[in-house]
Length: 308
Image 1 (tube, rainbow, N blue to C red):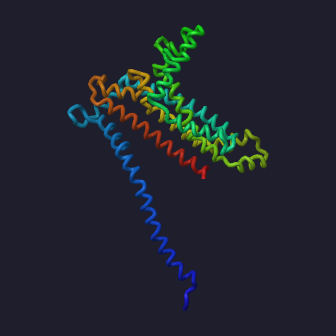
Image 2 (tube, rainbow, N blue to C red):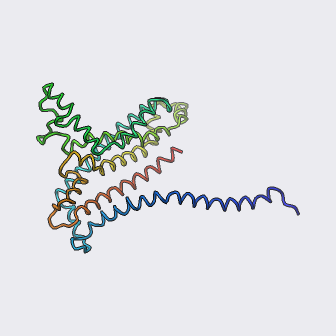
Image 3 (cartoon, rainbow, N blue to C red):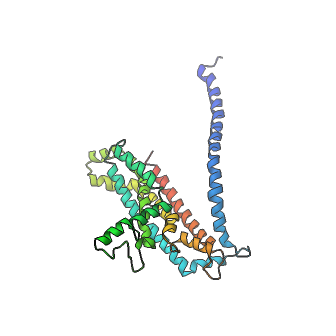
């Protein structure tokens, strides 16, 4: 009995497909090797070493006594300062960034304005550290351009040159909110705009056909769909601000937030009776960041369902 053409080709096709698929998977995994090596060498190992050092005393013996540093009032104050600065800049940055995204939705997708804002956000979201600190020092520092202009206008005790009887605002922990927002808002635009672009016009048309209003569309369709992406971006902004170091280090000499307190503990131990305080603080930051990134990943998976 002779086989048909389809029957004769079926086994060969299945065999060739079975042989090609594992090979392609192998190539994909090999392509991830450089990134995996980078993550292990420059992220995983340093994080483990930094956090793990908090469990050893000066002689190198394992101990849990170092965790007593979390009860120190200065350490608790630094954690609280880091949390409220991160929360405030994340909320304000998320709201302003979402408003910009909403406004951009009224422009052409391939238009100049949207492309310009997207490109500028990509650059400004990465603009931090000493350069950002210098830009704000030159603008609202003690001898900054805006500060001197306000003084010339008769405002001898303006907000930038005098704050809460503690000197210039920019050089105190509350002043970090201003430069932090400079990169928080662009980061929100980068992370939230794709979710806004994922809203399908057919959903609005279906809402209009069923007699729904614009208010109904946003409250019952768009907002529930965008909520996971919004809160995911909010968590990302919080983590970004919570872990920022270079900009704060260029503006504030002493501790005040956790990254600067870790630097202070590395140069001089200030918690009496506790060893490796910097490692203990690093452990606290790692725990908080792991919780934040886990929640962010969960929200991103939920948001991605509507972006397919």
